[in-house]
Image (cartoon, rainbow, N blue to C red):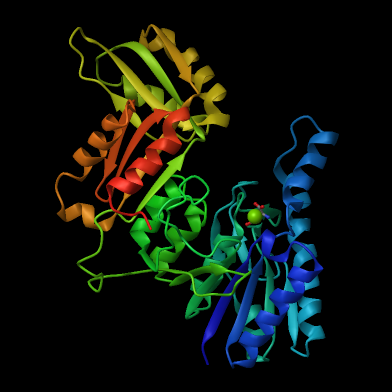
Length: 406
Ligand code: ASP
Ligand code: MG
């Protein structure tokens, strides 16, 4: 008997009709003889609604009480889904993250899973029950309820699949898989049949919205094959797995184009060029909990240099304050914040062995009159920061230039 973990996102269980359709599908999977564990998100936009409520009663809600509130969303969907499955004559039982043995650290709002004590789930599976687990939550070592960060149900699903050594983790969502670009801005985007873990990681990190980044990290670390598919059509979608050597050599060099307009760029001007300055700045930012992404520092000609870096837009004000505090110490001139930026990235495992991919990217942007602000690369990705207003055009032109158009 194989074990399948199925994850259903908020849109998949948004109302009673959707819950019925999902329950039918789970019952079907169980009747085929598979063991089934389900991770479920809160219904529709209910997490957003709860956050809105919290903001109406407190000026800066967060921490323990916020997690207590938000985990209620998944409690509702898990119980309703479990009832709907039982209604179909299939034994099912729902568990909170805590009951499912998901132990996290105590970083409220962005807790990390430390361990899964899966014995309670295993017992229920051995009894033939379908296990419905509330996504996005766990219990801290200090015995408080925690959440894993927005979109965290993906991580719950993959972590459960790893802990229970499931054969596959199916991620059901409202799109039919992973696309070569966001179909909303790139109408010629194609659904990809399969993507490697490394490519998916880069996609998730650079704006691909289908899977949460941490879930992909988990899947790669524990080698859990993911199948991203639609809970509206139930068609096969995109496999994310270790492609090893069996990747088709004919395949395109670039697999996908992503974009991300959620960051802002800070530039510290006229920074003295001596050892320890970057260390000081970025240590202060790290201590303040700012997530720095791209960093660019120029060679200096006059013993003064500029340092630019990007951070999530909602952390820009905090980052600016941290830098302003340091200006005197480091002897820099000032700091500017540019919020009208976006990043476009090309991703493909084939890049490693094909020279000139970055050059083609820059030529394509140049031919379209798009100016590049910053560049960063990894072995299988090249990213450019461009003006925010230009980013959709950048995605479409790169999609065409790398032969990805359907
Ligand atoms: N309900 C949570 C959220 O909206 C978790 C999830 O959907 O994965 O972020
Ligand atoms: Mg969600």
